Length: 246
Image: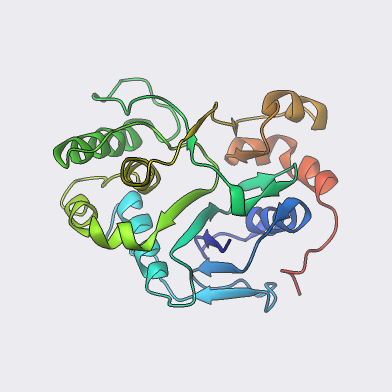
């Protein structure tokens, strides 16, 4: 399975470096690794760059959708590929050829709540937009935004290009991962696997991190994690350079 990384090249690349180390250590059946955007200076030839400059005129979610459609133009990519963010870390052996679609919640929310969480009301606007467009297309509207690798399907992206294009008319756009997963599940009959979202805000130490992760194979982080000792934990987990580093 090909893995395509979304990466904002204005960041320093620390999260990406550790994510790639985790992928090499625990990823099974990884065919090729691609990077949407400009490769950092330390990246080796084991990573293939897909030229894409983040469009600052687009809201974040629409920029992500545009980037993934850019990846789908690459003929060497198979019809099915997985999208990975630079802050996803796989800590247990994971077979990406058998990687399921993970279900977070049965439904995307239908209103913007007042309490901020993971991006606050701006993110919630994209959630509500996603539900609305999927409903209008006669598709299910479960929540698959689970902070782990998620699938893209070229043929289905082309078939439902009108839905993704409509997202660009909406402020904040839609969540590509949930939209794509609902389309795949509806059109192929693939069975999703329910589980919790392993977004880790803070961890006191390695054992605390493992306790929060539970029995899932990966976790994701945010800035607070790094500011409160996260770098030391990840260095302990993945101390060695990967083949993706010079």
